Length: 73
Image (cartoon, rainbow, N blue to C red; front, top):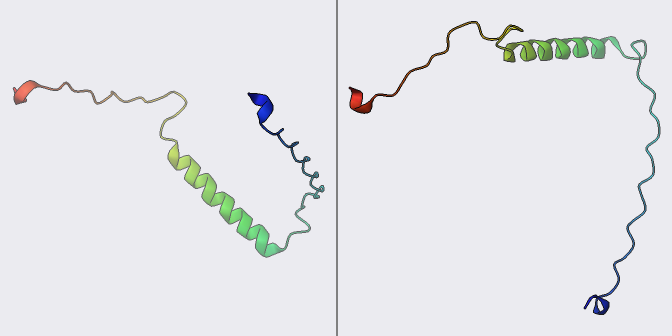
């Protein structure tokens, strides 16, 4: 009974493309913002390295494995 329903409207037109924005260079940035960027990047690098807890070789320690006992015996 699809002929009793109205036809679906056409899709909206695609959005207009965004204008190209030129990349900022170091010469264009003021000294305060370059210092702020350096500090922010330093904090991010420190935070990222703190999350990595193993080396490329993997965990070198023995795993903490134990078996459950029945009723403590």
